[in-house]
Length: 218
Image (cartoon, rainbow, N blue to C red; front, side, top):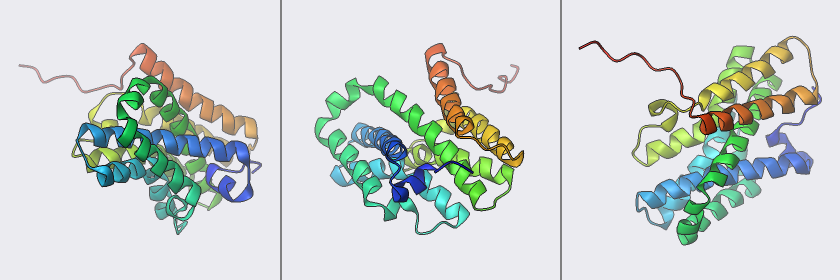
């Protein structure tokens, strides 16, 4: 398939993909660092939550599909991006908190990139389509879930009705379907990234929420 996913880009020198991957890790790590600051964690706690949020999804993906050692702990550039984000939130968290909207945008970009790249990496290693979709979604949302659990909070992807996992699943499903149909084109890949990012940002702007069960009758 004529696509180099975000993780293989780290080894092939594909700079656009490398930059996007680093931006995604950095954005997720900022959210982890901010969560630790809100909990009044020390510097170690801030760095751990930043790393968990920024690298957790990719590590979970690689463990699930047997791509070990996970790139999240074997590539110094990803580790550096997560560490820098953690230190920035520790020392400059009031300023970082003011750019929360930008962090949300970067988080959406990271969600789209990681969900698609995770799906493609699973497919490339020979998994079934439905397995690849699950792996792709976990790649996108896994870091945030680990961050919330370490912070002692229910994962936002489960406890909140924000459209987060649904956009990731939508994009991952399109990638898996086109792969299974033998349709391979970079435009489809990047179109799915844009689809995930667009739905996520539109949901934030419009206040769209995932369906919830009706409250019990009194």
